[in-house]
Image (cartoon, rainbow, N blue to C red; front, top):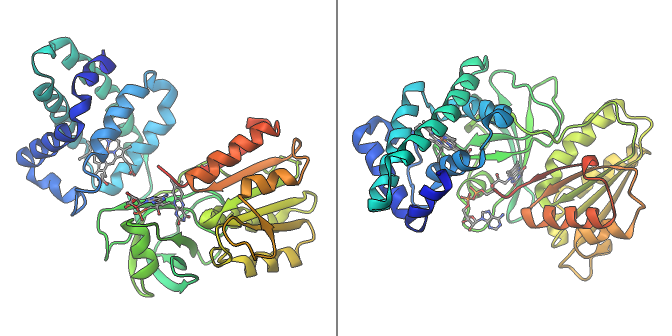
Amino acid sequence: MLKESWSLVEEHQDKVAGYFYARLFLSHPDLRDLFPVHMDVQRTRLLNAIVTAVQTLEDPEQFDDYLRALGRDHRKFHVIPEHYEVVGGALIESMRAFAGEQWGVEYDQAWADAYAVIAAKMLAGADADQNPPYWYGEVVAHERRSHDIAVFTVLPLQPLEYRAGQYLSLEATKYQPRLWRTYSPANAPRRDNTLEFHVRALGAGWVSSALVRRLQVGDMIKLAAPMGTMTLDRRSTRDAVFVAGGTGLAPVKSLLEELTRYNRTRWVHVFFGARTREDLYDLADLNRLAARYPWLSVVTACSDDPTFPGEQGNISDVVARYGPWNEHDFFVCGSGVMVKASLTKLAELQVPSIRIKYDSFSD
Ligand SMILES: Cc1cc2nc3c(=O)[nH]c(=O)nc-3n(C[C@H](O)[C@H](O)[C@H](O)COP(=O)(O)OP(=O)(O)OC[C@H]3O[C@@H](n4cnc5c(N)ncnc54)[C@H](O)[C@@H]3O)c2cc1C
Ligand code: HEM
């Protein structure tokens, strides 16, 4: 029924979203402050998120962890329990308004029931969270590594616990308030609590370009709770392969740093690819690590730089030229296109999917 009723309004999604926000902000003007200043870019973000959640989480029990984490995460938007009912009501009214006569009371009930189950799980997750909704952090170093890549370091004002390989969302408060995007710390947790980030500005993107081109030492940013499961299994004795595209190197470096603290027995191969040599922005440090740790080897590749002295081609193809890989743990990180190509290649090479962890930088 959820899918059937959504199909009645799907082709008018943009208008449904417009109506939804108008209803929300007219009835509760205070809610406007929770959302980004410019809503043209991502006008349908929340509406789409809820509709997708309601339709795909057919068995909410199975998604318990995800929904609890989502609820915890919503604390960073300043969402309070009372907001859930208002948003649910506006959602159903907007769909009803555009569906016309075909809308039935049974659809109201189906959406209300599904929304209530999901909201209850999100609220339970938020309620159980002992952490602050977000951490303030001060930018203590910022370095441009290429025309569109920066490496910067943040010192959270309170300790922020995370595991190497995880990511967290951040808000460049001074430049793009209320726009949160996820980034992966490039270091394992340190005693001084600092986090290093590697960011590449993408086209017309809002947040990453501010982090690369405008962020300065002394700026305060907000950081939210860590998420993600691309972490090391300390019990694994298998050799490991890390495949990184561009700033997908960030979590890989974090995992490598953790390995430098205890690894003696596992061979580790890093494949680092980018379009041009300028985009291999952190090669010097990677080579320094490889010189220091005999178990580490690094292969670099460019797909769009014919005179580059390393490997040529997409990093997924380069990985396939080495191997065999069927006894290794794999970690893959980079753009959506790069991750997809790598997973396809690993499947062709018959690497069992259970041995592959990955994070894609695309939504
Ligand atoms: C788990 C995870 C971890 C991440 N870690 C990092 C990290 O460590 N370092 C890092 O640099 N990024 C990382 N990202 C990506 C980052 O979160 C942003 O999604 C990305 O930088 C774009 O954000 P934006 O605000 O600049 O662009 P948005 O404002 O979200 O996008 C606006 C426009 O920018 C353009 N655009 C956006 N994405 C792309 C793209 N992939 N290719 C081409 N054009 C695009 C499009 O025109 C789009 O319409 C990570 C993403 C995820 C999901
Ligand atoms: C079933 C209930 C809900 C679900 C499944 C849901 C889901 C989501 C998801 C998946 C995102 C995107 C997360 C991200 O980009 O980091 C999001 C963003 C957001 N949500 Fe929710 N949400 C729900 C309820 C609410 C409520 C009640 C509010 C309160 C007003 C709210 C406010 C927001 C805001 C402000 C954003 C950021 C929007 C933006 O960047 O444009 N959400 N939500």
